[in-house]
Image 1 (cartoon, rainbow, N blue to C red):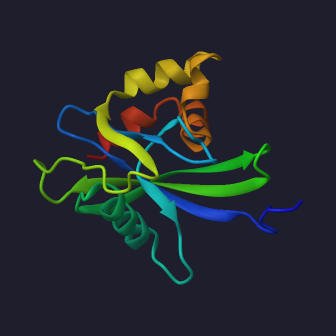
Image 2 (cartoon, rainbow, N blue to C red; image 1 turned 90 degrees about the vertical axis):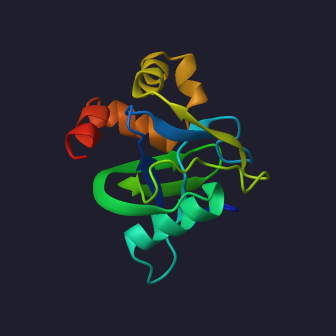
Length: 156
């Protein structure tokens, strides 16, 4: 188990929507999920509040100033090939300035940010071949809660 965490780590990922219901997604760079699509987020630090984590990580990665609103999901994500295990908390977020756009602030971690539709994400998740394009936590979220887009939209 060299390189493995002895215990699962906790990640917090933000679901940030625009007025059209699209979400901010970026293509990851690196050994864990490289080339796959995910949303902004990162590791929960010791003593850190869940919403403070997603707000901090989103600001660092995209420059977006957001507010965490509601926890909308939790996924259990086992990366067998990488010997890593995460519990991922999914937080619905809102932009403080609804006109602000995401920027690529960590070029070593993300190819860039774009607005994408839930329909595109769900179509990828439904296809065995295209599912490989989604980061495991996002794939698990969509497959575990096929109504996540409607749940997020209903609580806006």
